[in-house]
Image (cartoon, rainbow, N blue to C red; front, side, top):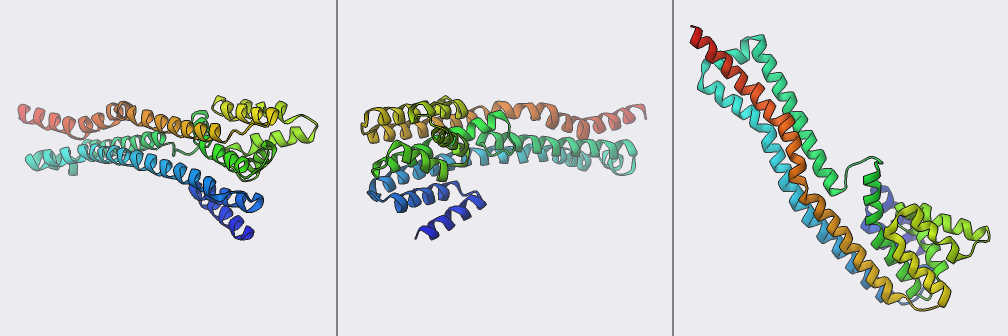
Amino acid sequence: LHEAVKALQVEASRRGWHDVQLLAATLAGLVDRGGPAVPALQRLRLTLIGAVEARSRAGAQAGQARASAALLAGAPALFALLVAVADADIGRFYVSEVPGAACVAVALLLSYTGWRWMNREVEIALGRHGGTSGRQMARDRQAAVAPTIDLVAMAVGAGGTPADAVALVAERGPPEVHRAFGRVIELRAGGTLLVDALPVVTELLGPEYHPLVTALVTSEQGGASVGALLQRLATEAEQARRRSVDLALARLPVRLLVPLVVCQLPAVIVGAVVPLTIVAFRHLRG
């Protein structure tokens, strides 16, 4: 069973299945440390349901934004086609004259650039844009808070100590937190007390992890049960992540105005208005 769970986690990590990674880490922790499985799996169920609901809601809004982007990207070409059909001289201008072909090429380039730009804004709003920018890394760390707390709660609920929880997260936790919790283990190996080493998690990952660190320090110092506190922290972390995604999506229409003004409107002007003006001026001169 241990080998099967480990293989599942490796495959999930390779394919980028974050939900399956969390499931595999939870199962591995239960296999390694024992303890009651039902509470841990119930917490995991709530976490995964919340993540799926958030992604579904974000995906629906993102789908609408992508459809709008595609429509706006095709608008210049459609407008130019209607103009060409309405006036044969404009159609000949597009096909047989160098300025007309240049207008078409520039309009298509602007439309394509605007479409790519708007889709990139949607991906950024969803937190799916690749790269290692500070904003993206901060968003990834925030998304990892709830799964990390779930792993800690599972380890503690199974009878483990705060040190066991730290070791579990360092070994099987989300990729965004490996280094920080591994650093805690390194400090402990050098003789530092766990309560003195834990604050490095907040230093490396940010203030979102301070409540978790405080709970672990409290449990280590007094031996008190922090299961209920960890459950509340996991719920609050998931709610904060949802609010962050909702806020980013609420700002998306404003962010899409920039490529609309910079690319799509000039594409309409260059692809349709300019040829129409040139041909109309020729008619007036003729």
